[in-house]
Image 1 (cartoon, chains in turn brown, green, orange, blue):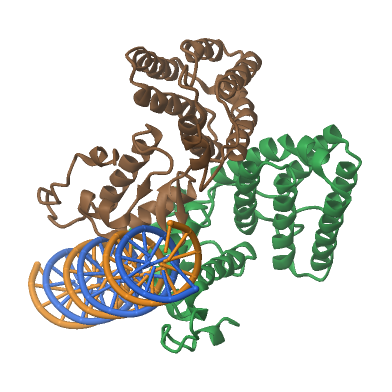
Image 2 (tube, protein in one colour):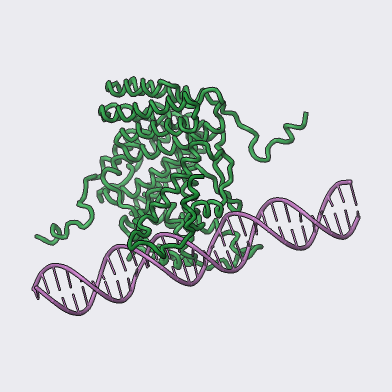
Length: 247
Length: 247
DNA sequence: TGAACACCCATTGTATACGCTTTGATGGAT
DNA sequence: ATCCATCAAAGCGTATACAATGGGTGTTCA
């Protein structure tokens, strides 16, 4: 019900296209839709469990179901949405096990690239990252959790890209997206995501070229995030109506 | 070509279908096709660069292009095929950089899970893995490189699954598939893939619970594989004809 | 009154048709 | 003779139509 407002930018169709009026930009259009939906999920404007009906999305974005299906499949392969055979798509609700595995994996890979990142980081890179961290802090302070969460994921993703290893950077990007989902389900309302100044400190250490210290710092940082969650198996599917309404 | 007989029943669709027999297997059918194509790529029966035309595949497998497109997209997201906008699909030809990144990543993650694998491995697991290793050695000896390559990838993938971390295991599976492609492009005809007895030795160490030694062993193992390749940037697409013909 | 069955609707799965882009060829002009 | 332009064909991109399934609801019988 609340996911409706996500798609405000209706779809002025492709009327205005330049030169080749047609939809030469069709591919880009799909990519844009993908990012719109993806962002909405990462920012928790589409909560886990939310259903994503194909023709609803189709006419919101002004494309046919064919294109939407393609996008949903892509999201499914990234584990952001779950495709149940005859039931359609819905935003993935990560299990406790998945949550633990994702963070264990992040611990391994994000720590593992810190040395490389420290080696490659330029002052320009540091500036961009600090800018991100600043925006994140500001969003956090002004209560815009959605924005803060997305910025945090983007920070980690960009950081990974500095390792120079495209393969692992892409993977870390996916892990960060999934982490946003995990925060949505298992996050305690108190503090969410990364501590305010952790990211800034991390940049300092990295810019100083201290790879080993950065590795340790990232390890603590991720552990802190995970510790702030309450990852407990909730009574899945067909749950606890009894438990809810009994007292 | 053994899949031909599958397709003669062109698409009487589900006309005559026995009651529900129907396409409860529709999804499974697509999955089967996916694995068929995927295996063909991993086994080098479809070499990098090979074009995969949609309607050709469609009528080979007796489904419509719609289903094929879905499968090709999935393969594309796993980097096994490359989708060029108006030109269709072709088996990915990994770049040298990609090859290096894949192996660097494998070094990090596969070594990183050895401790967990050593902890979880049961004698039953060891038996299964030894069986795989034996089949791989046999295939290698009898000159069936295709089979050996696939078995090697499967060995590493199964091993990763023993870590208990589904997320990282899936990732490693993808990396192994991509490695098969890399072998196809950069492999020197001499020896390919894993040394004959490496896998057996690794199982011994793991079964003995020596996590650290297993980590080191895996590190050497992967390094040996990478060293057996000749990863050099080949003049990619429309390259340096100038450079080639100038002197 | 409760449970089971049947029907209907909502929604996905699949195929096909059409349009556009690109590639390769052929013919004409310089 | 070579180069360029126009045209034809082939293959991908998108939309739409149709079939089938599963769930929800209403009704009926015990």
